[in-house]
Length: 366
Image 1 (cartoon, one colour):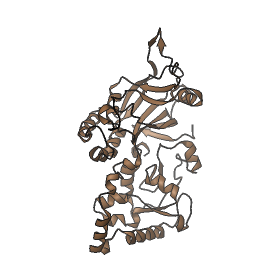
Image 2: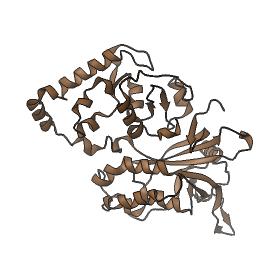
Image 3: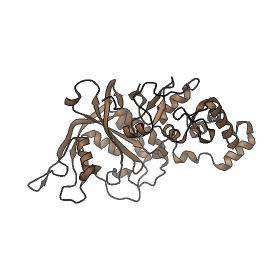
Image 4: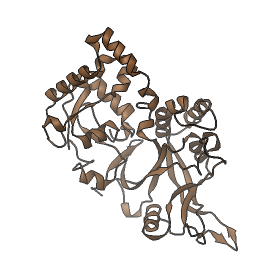
């Protein structure tokens, strides 16, 4: 068990013994008021989780500890068999974070929807805020295609209220479901029933911190005019070059790879550049303390919120990547002081990254 990544939920520590990531919110599942204009119909309350035949079927059965996919039929009548009873849960904090990430898409609607979904935002946010506990448990049932169907698609659904609530939040194409399989770190692991932590997340480019509409808040013409009027505050090419130079001077090597060749180093913003500009904080956009020298792979990990750093500089690894991926990256997510940066005078930027860029809830790791 020592090789499994850990997570803390409501002050209780768990091992992540398995996970299913990136289950897309397909059109067949999407609630009717959230549908894109290109699609019709009302959507179904059942969620596709994979094929239940072959090696992928073995994987699905092992994950949910259930092997009766598609067999729910007695005397030619459909029977919905329980897969896990009251062992699955959503967290209120994850649902609130999803709504925060999705707020600009709800308001500006980069995709073309059947309805004006901006009218749904307050209603959906209220439905989450009214939840009385952090963990909301529910049961799931097998509503898969029957074994007589050659497609053998595995589906789950629930009759609990939280299932209806999360369905109404989810935006099509750009959202996905992540399921973590958890065991408590204390007690007899062999005799413990697993918990299944359901989370919804938004594609990076549609999160409110980097939403496409933010890219267009300042046109090229406006940027040129601003540089002409206030060259000393320029955030154009000259400002970017100076920012990169100062970041690398202050942090001359990537802490992950130890590479110091500046041709391979990226000056990665801690608080995203677009947010600094949107808030009118050009000083932060070109502040070298708002930057880390990282090689490309690790720049992407940091930029898209798969990793972050504490105020003391210690690395924190999120839960959206597999143990195999962490191993290939030569990172141990469980190691204390596995890797750290020099955090001096970066507190404000690091706090922003943890709270708004990091894709997990930082409280699950502290």
